[in-house]
Image (cartoon, rainbow, N blue to C red; front, side):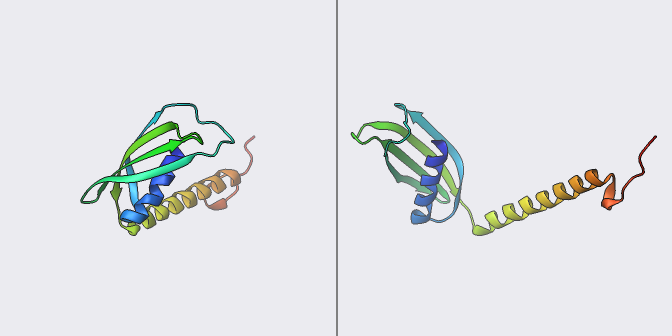
Length: 117
């Protein structure tokens, strides 16, 4: 449910300010959240201080009973923040693949080692 709420807040951010990162996310589970039940999700901006967005959300069941409440703090960031994170992820994946290939072939740069007696 935390992922669902975080994603809900993500959609709200685009309506009120743009891309942001989660700084704090608090969830209070009031009742069990069941599978195969249609719930209503609502999120609202409750405050803004510069780049900081304070938000809250609720999830209610078909009878209108709250099953979950949440508050969170997000920090607005430039799109370049996500581009840099993506580049770091690619760099790490490439480095990991090179290391794995070296281990599979028995040495650095794909040079196979002779078996040891």
